[in-house]
Image (cartoon, rainbow, N blue to C red; front, side, top):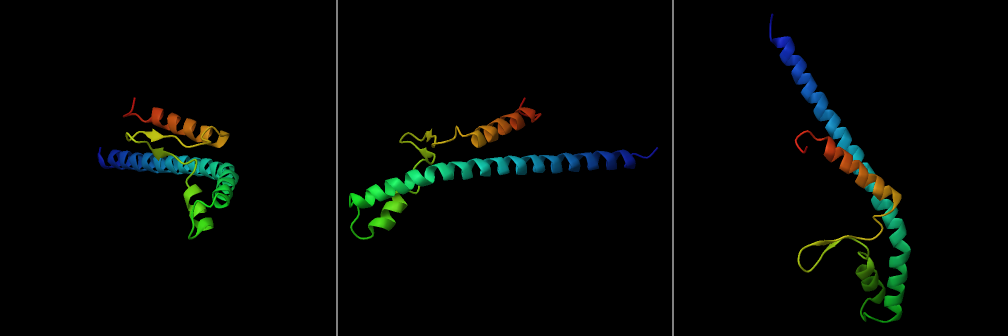
Length: 115
């Protein structure tokens, strides 16, 4: 009996697993995107109000509206603290973000080399 059919079967299985993993990762990235869209919706009015206050306080002289909007555009985002640790951004407790985080944890736990 030839080993060629067995080799072909194993090769097809390997490609199918890789395609499945790519589909999983695409699904997880889509969940991350939904989270970021939901966060952006929640942050937009807060950033707008903060920019309005910044302009009213006349913090910048040359281009106050543009400079204030730029300053506030990253409010609520994750950033690096003074000692290099990540400071988590706002609104990662939204349902879309919790679903994404849970899906990533399940995916990580399902990886055979991670267990």
